Image (cartoon, rainbow, N blue to C red; front, side, top):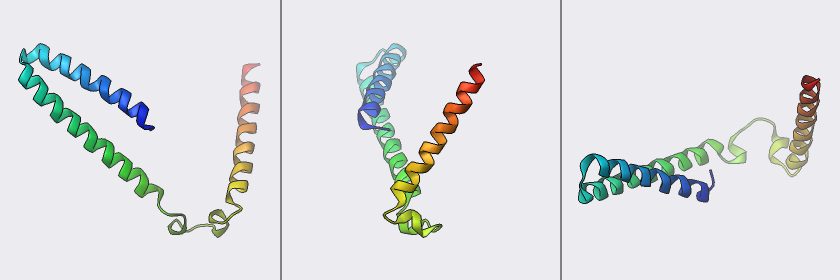
Length: 98
């Protein structure tokens, strides 16, 4: 998830949280404190999610498998696989429309 997308969702969620919280408590101080706590919890969750994605991706040498995938020819091989997959998707979409 890109940062601008996260930030937009983050601000919308905090705004909605603050509105609902104020409607329930009728207290600006409680609403402010609860919204700050909510913001910190969301930030912690985002940080943990990013750490998990980085950990899951791992370094290319640690994954094992085919050594040719971590070499210089990997982008070309992956590009060929993606083009073949895209062509097969186009063929299946076209045949299901008729």
